[in-house]
Length: 390
Image (tube, rainbow, N blue to C red):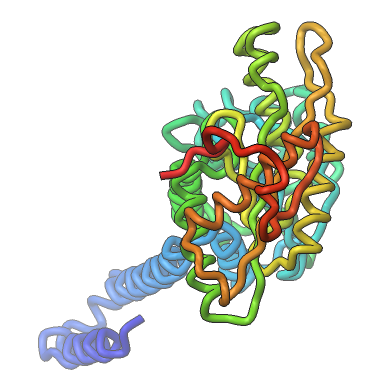
């Protein structure tokens, strides 16, 4: 809160109490509760200013983890819940959820056995407000979706509602001192949560604009932006970074023999494997069609090769759920590493990785190749690049 505003308000208050009319009628005004009412309004204004300050602190965060960290801090500043858990759908078109839980300000694994929140959607679309968990139980009766939550259980369940339905849930546990939340605390939560919900929704909408709709991986545009940033950053440091280019072997056969929906299922299942086996800071993307790329910041060639091989062998064991058994999916991969001495731009770096991928294809597919000088001369030249670059 601005100190100047505080001083202005204090001056106005002093002038009010020093007014001759107020002094003359002080006993009467006090007897009818005017001063008590003014004090209550003053406290309410102060509370709203505090709420606005705390809400804006959350709302102005641009990273979803920062939004949640700040929310936990702002809530715990007034009272300490036994836990706070956030459950949200990173991609609205997919049921998969992410869970992030806190105890005593620290990230913890509460072992929540819940994999989607769709069972809650109908209820919270009708009643989009925080609700006591016991009341929610009574409303939903014996709904199986409640079973994983009963092991905690939360005291309060707060929905995150957006234009596309239920985006997520916030679970707030009982107070640490095992005292029930009072009316003021519940009112504070109810007023703070719109800031939290809007901040999370804004972040999810932004993330959605960076994602490929079919696979949920980053899209071509975002990947190229991050590649350009990484090339610039690498030229200014002593670090090595790497990139992997991936192509599904004989993908056309899936579309031709089993239909394009089967081909789509192959791509979606492959994307799940890629997400599972890359690291938090890596940038996996669907580059186009059946082509994928993974940017590996600050990653030496040997580590990049290990990650590529881990992806390849995992896909080799991957089962694609479909109406009939599909042939085993395999991928070919090319790896290129670059540092400050690399004179290539983003396009040149990707072409090198693509050349290594081409060698993998020429070797018989289902393998990983690291680009080395004169590598492309070891096999007959091809007529076009596998990966589409400007």
